[in-house]
Image 1 (cartoon, rainbow, N blue to C red):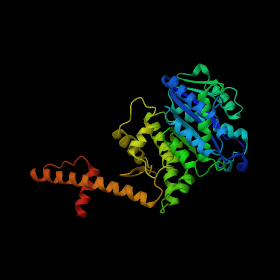
Image 2: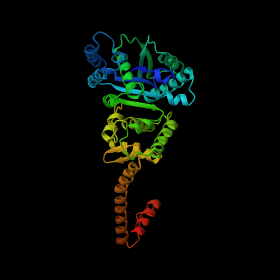
Image 3: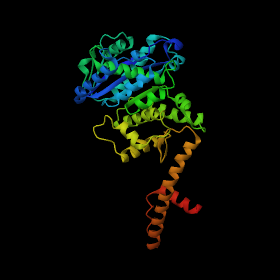
Image 4: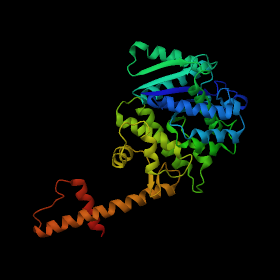
Length: 375
């Protein structure tokens, strides 16, 4: 079973200059069988940086050099991160002016993302925490999912003073804050993001991260219209299918969320890197063939625009990216069509036009004939 420990960064205040622009919930995920080993290693890290005190992001604050050292040491621990990141400014502009409606929306958001993602999960939050959101989330979960209805999912409380894992989730949530919150961002934010890069198992950003991708893009050909089109289609697909329990649809949504995050770190993401993230919590690893046909291929069939090249995959942000996709398709499709045409012509020749192997493939036959007309 997967064990999760959750904490938050930020609050429900709409005073963005003083109280921050983002609200983040982060959960660290650990396989139950690894708890003891990780706990001992984490205690060693706590002793090194916090002595006998709690691991807390607020204790490190703006000491970015110290934060980066701690995150570097945390790389050795076998845990992954599930995170929901909300831009409060966007919610405010959509009418979420009241704190109660804000919490209600975030509760629904987190509940849906968390409990639709995991078949088996024990989630722990701080029992005596002062944060109001987690208190409201506990009530929301108990109302939506009474304990008697739980199958392989349970929701429980621990005292953060006694739970080093809830302390870790506090540190991770705070570190994510230094990546996304406009009052916390600094020249070390990209270094923090790179250190968390390989630990992300699932991340969901609301709304879509176009401003982030635009701000970090080093592509002089950045096209806002193409970027908006690409992200709008992804956003629409996710919203339409967010409650779909089809495993393949859930994998496609997982891939899109991961790609949205990874592209904020590097312009192209290799198949190997994507599979490393997608396979983090899978019992059976996803292979390349399945990924290309059932994930990439099916998403493209549904109108999702995904650029590809020898460098990997990306969400198109320029006409040049679309060109990479067309060039890749041209390199694969035309040679294949020509091979089919040559085989068909050879069979027709030897059979004196009595056999046409494309007879039952009307669409393909039309395409082959059009190629012959052009040539």
